[in-house]
Image (cartoon, rainbow, N blue to C red; front, side):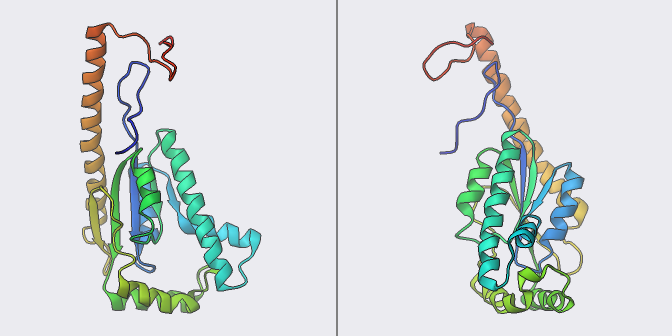
Length: 232
Protein backbone atom coordinates (compact mmCIF):
# COMPACT_ATOMS: atom_id res chain seq x y z
CA UNK A 1 0.00 0.00 0.00
CA UNK A 2 1.13 3.60 -0.60
CA UNK A 3 1.54 6.25 2.05
CA UNK A 4 -1.64 7.73 3.56
CA UNK A 5 -2.88 10.69 1.57
CA UNK A 6 -1.86 14.07 2.98
CA UNK A 7 -4.79 16.14 4.24
CA UNK A 8 -5.42 19.82 4.74
CA UNK A 9 -6.73 21.48 7.91
CA UNK A 10 -10.32 20.49 7.11
CA UNK A 11 -9.45 16.84 6.55
CA UNK A 12 -9.67 17.15 2.77
CA UNK A 13 -7.18 15.26 0.61
CA UNK A 14 -4.47 17.54 -0.73
CA UNK A 15 -3.82 17.37 -4.45
CA UNK A 16 -0.59 15.54 -5.16
CA UNK A 17 1.99 17.37 -7.29
CA UNK A 18 2.95 16.09 -10.74
CA UNK A 19 6.05 13.93 -11.24
CA UNK A 20 7.46 13.32 -14.73
CA UNK A 21 10.07 10.54 -14.84
CA UNK A 22 12.16 10.79 -18.02
CA UNK A 23 14.27 7.71 -18.69
CA UNK A 24 16.01 5.72 -21.40
CA UNK A 25 19.45 4.62 -22.53
CA UNK A 26 22.46 6.94 -22.71
CA UNK A 27 22.32 8.74 -26.04
CA UNK A 28 18.54 8.38 -26.36
CA UNK A 29 17.90 12.12 -26.03
CA UNK A 30 16.30 11.97 -22.61
CA UNK A 31 18.25 14.86 -21.06
CA UNK A 32 17.39 17.20 -23.93
CA UNK A 33 13.73 16.23 -23.68
CA UNK A 34 13.63 16.64 -19.89
CA UNK A 35 15.12 20.12 -20.14
CA UNK A 36 12.42 21.10 -22.63
CA UNK A 37 9.58 19.47 -20.71
CA UNK A 38 10.33 21.34 -17.50
CA UNK A 39 9.60 24.85 -18.83
CA UNK A 40 6.74 23.59 -21.01
CA UNK A 41 5.02 22.08 -17.98
CA UNK A 42 6.03 24.85 -15.60
CA UNK A 43 8.12 22.45 -13.51
CA UNK A 44 11.76 22.36 -12.38
CA UNK A 45 13.81 19.72 -14.24
CA UNK A 46 16.32 17.74 -12.16
CA UNK A 47 18.81 15.87 -14.33
CA UNK A 48 21.38 13.41 -13.00
CA UNK A 49 24.37 15.03 -14.69
CA UNK A 50 23.52 18.38 -13.11
CA UNK A 51 24.35 16.67 -9.80
CA UNK A 52 27.18 14.40 -10.94
CA UNK A 53 29.31 16.96 -12.76
CA UNK A 54 29.65 19.38 -9.80
CA UNK A 55 30.59 16.39 -7.65
CA UNK A 56 33.29 15.45 -10.13
CA UNK A 57 34.56 19.03 -10.18
CA UNK A 58 34.66 19.21 -6.38
CA UNK A 59 35.91 15.72 -5.56
CA UNK A 60 37.69 14.61 -8.71
CA UNK A 61 37.04 11.59 -10.93
CA UNK A 62 40.45 10.28 -11.99
CA UNK A 63 39.16 6.89 -13.12
CA UNK A 64 36.03 5.02 -14.10
CA UNK A 65 35.57 3.49 -10.64
CA UNK A 66 35.44 6.94 -9.06
CA UNK A 67 33.06 8.14 -11.76
CA UNK A 68 30.69 5.26 -10.96
CA UNK A 69 30.86 6.08 -7.26
CA UNK A 70 29.98 9.71 -7.90
CA UNK A 71 27.24 8.59 -10.28
CA UNK A 72 25.62 6.66 -7.45
CA UNK A 73 25.96 9.68 -5.17
CA UNK A 74 24.36 11.85 -7.85
CA UNK A 75 21.32 9.55 -7.97
CA UNK A 76 20.95 9.78 -4.19
CA UNK A 77 21.15 13.57 -4.43
CA UNK A 78 18.65 13.63 -7.32
CA UNK A 79 16.09 11.48 -5.50
CA UNK A 80 16.55 13.46 -2.28
CA UNK A 81 16.10 16.80 -4.04
CA UNK A 82 13.01 15.54 -5.87
CA UNK A 83 11.56 14.28 -2.59
CA UNK A 84 12.04 17.66 -0.94
CA UNK A 85 10.38 19.41 -3.88
CA UNK A 86 7.42 17.03 -3.90
CA UNK A 87 6.97 17.31 -0.13
CA UNK A 88 6.60 21.06 -0.67
CA UNK A 89 3.68 20.22 -3.04
CA UNK A 90 5.66 21.34 -6.08
CA UNK A 91 5.83 19.17 -9.19
CA UNK A 92 9.10 18.12 -10.77
CA UNK A 93 10.69 16.46 -13.81
CA UNK A 94 13.42 13.94 -12.96
CA UNK A 95 15.79 12.49 -15.55
CA UNK A 96 18.41 9.75 -15.51
CA UNK A 97 19.29 6.47 -17.17
CA UNK A 98 17.21 4.70 -14.52
CA UNK A 99 17.89 0.96 -14.49
CA UNK A 100 14.95 -1.43 -14.73
CA UNK A 101 15.03 -3.82 -11.79
CA UNK A 102 17.20 -1.51 -9.64
CA UNK A 103 15.68 1.98 -9.72
CA UNK A 104 12.10 1.07 -8.84
CA UNK A 105 12.34 1.45 -5.02
CA UNK A 106 13.59 5.03 -5.26
CA UNK A 107 11.09 5.95 -7.97
CA UNK A 108 8.16 4.34 -6.15
CA UNK A 109 9.05 6.35 -3.05
CA UNK A 110 8.64 9.49 -5.15
CA UNK A 111 5.53 8.27 -6.95
CA UNK A 112 3.64 7.62 -3.69
CA UNK A 113 3.59 11.36 -3.03
CA UNK A 114 2.93 12.49 -6.60
CA UNK A 115 0.87 12.06 -9.76
CA UNK A 116 3.49 10.23 -11.78
CA UNK A 117 3.95 9.65 -15.49
CA UNK A 118 6.91 7.89 -17.11
CA UNK A 119 8.34 9.27 -20.37
CA UNK A 120 10.65 6.70 -21.97
CA UNK A 121 13.01 7.78 -24.76
CA UNK A 122 14.35 5.23 -27.22
CA UNK A 123 15.65 4.75 -30.72
CA UNK A 124 17.00 1.71 -32.52
CA UNK A 125 20.15 0.04 -31.20
CA UNK A 126 22.44 1.15 -34.03
CA UNK A 127 21.37 4.80 -33.76
CA UNK A 128 21.86 4.85 -30.00
CA UNK A 129 25.36 3.43 -30.29
CA UNK A 130 26.24 5.82 -33.13
CA UNK A 131 25.01 8.84 -31.19
CA UNK A 132 26.91 7.85 -28.08
CA UNK A 133 30.12 7.14 -30.01
CA UNK A 134 29.89 10.46 -31.86
CA UNK A 135 29.28 12.33 -28.62
CA UNK A 136 32.27 10.61 -27.01
CA UNK A 137 34.40 11.49 -30.04
CA UNK A 138 33.45 15.17 -29.82
CA UNK A 139 34.43 15.26 -26.16
CA UNK A 140 31.52 17.57 -25.39
CA UNK A 141 30.75 16.14 -21.96
CA UNK A 142 32.69 16.33 -18.71
CA UNK A 143 35.85 14.22 -18.96
CA UNK A 144 34.85 12.43 -15.75
CA UNK A 145 32.12 10.56 -17.62
CA UNK A 146 34.78 8.51 -19.48
CA UNK A 147 32.43 8.23 -22.45
CA UNK A 148 34.90 6.33 -24.67
CA UNK A 149 35.46 3.70 -21.99
CA UNK A 150 31.75 3.42 -21.23
CA UNK A 151 30.69 2.65 -24.81
CA UNK A 152 30.95 -1.18 -24.37
CA UNK A 153 28.74 -0.88 -21.27
CA UNK A 154 26.17 1.06 -23.28
CA UNK A 155 26.13 -1.70 -25.89
CA UNK A 156 25.72 -4.37 -23.21
CA UNK A 157 22.91 -2.42 -21.56
CA UNK A 158 20.99 -2.17 -24.81
CA UNK A 159 21.27 -5.93 -25.20
CA UNK A 160 20.17 -6.86 -21.67
CA UNK A 161 17.26 -4.39 -21.48
CA UNK A 162 18.41 -2.54 -18.39
CA UNK A 163 17.15 0.77 -19.78
CA UNK A 164 13.66 -0.40 -20.58
CA UNK A 165 10.94 1.54 -18.70
CA UNK A 166 11.02 0.94 -14.93
CA UNK A 167 8.29 -1.27 -13.53
CA UNK A 168 6.03 1.35 -11.95
CA UNK A 169 2.28 1.72 -11.48
CA UNK A 170 2.18 4.86 -13.61
CA UNK A 171 1.12 5.78 -17.15
CA UNK A 172 3.85 5.34 -19.75
CA UNK A 173 4.56 7.62 -22.71
CA UNK A 174 6.96 6.02 -25.20
CA UNK A 175 8.91 8.50 -27.32
CA UNK A 176 10.82 7.49 -30.44
CA UNK A 177 13.74 9.92 -30.75
CA UNK A 178 15.15 8.59 -34.03
CA UNK A 179 14.15 11.69 -35.99
CA UNK A 180 12.93 14.37 -33.63
CA UNK A 181 10.15 13.13 -31.38
CA UNK A 182 7.35 10.71 -32.18
CA UNK A 183 4.86 11.61 -30.88
CA UNK A 184 5.88 15.22 -31.37
CA UNK A 185 6.85 17.47 -28.49
CA UNK A 186 3.45 19.16 -28.13
CA UNK A 187 1.76 15.75 -27.98
CA UNK A 188 4.17 14.63 -25.25
CA UNK A 189 3.35 17.74 -23.24
CA UNK A 190 -0.38 17.14 -23.72
CA UNK A 191 -0.02 13.51 -22.62
CA UNK A 192 1.74 14.57 -19.41
CA UNK A 193 -0.85 17.24 -18.69
CA UNK A 194 -3.71 14.84 -19.40
CA UNK A 195 -2.41 12.29 -16.88
CA UNK A 196 -1.99 14.97 -14.25
CA UNK A 197 -5.38 16.55 -14.92
CA UNK A 198 -7.27 13.24 -14.74
CA UNK A 199 -5.55 12.24 -11.51
CA UNK A 200 -5.97 15.68 -10.01
CA UNK A 201 -9.70 15.77 -10.80
CA UNK A 202 -10.09 12.42 -9.01
CA UNK A 203 -8.17 13.64 -5.95
CA UNK A 204 -10.08 16.94 -5.78
CA UNK A 205 -13.36 15.04 -5.99
CA UNK A 206 -12.25 12.85 -3.11
CA UNK A 207 -11.29 15.96 -1.13
CA UNK A 208 -14.73 17.52 -1.68
CA UNK A 209 -16.49 14.32 -0.57
CA UNK A 210 -14.42 14.08 2.62
CA UNK A 211 -14.92 17.77 3.41
CA UNK A 212 -18.69 17.45 2.86
CA UNK A 213 -18.86 14.47 5.20
CA UNK A 214 -16.90 16.42 7.81
CA UNK A 215 -19.29 19.37 7.66
CA UNK A 216 -22.34 17.10 7.95
CA UNK A 217 -20.92 15.31 10.97
CA UNK A 218 -19.72 18.48 12.73
CA UNK A 219 -16.15 17.24 12.70
CA UNK A 220 -13.62 18.71 15.10
CA UNK A 221 -10.15 19.86 14.11
CA UNK A 222 -7.57 17.29 12.99
CA UNK A 223 -6.31 14.98 15.72
CA UNK A 224 -2.68 14.46 16.65
CA UNK A 225 -1.17 10.97 17.15
CA UNK A 226 -2.11 10.97 20.85
CA UNK A 227 -5.73 11.81 20.05
CA UNK A 228 -5.66 15.43 21.21
CA UNK A 229 -7.63 17.79 19.03
CA UNK A 230 -5.78 20.72 17.45
CA UNK A 231 -7.43 24.00 16.69
CA UNK A 232 -8.33 24.24 12.99
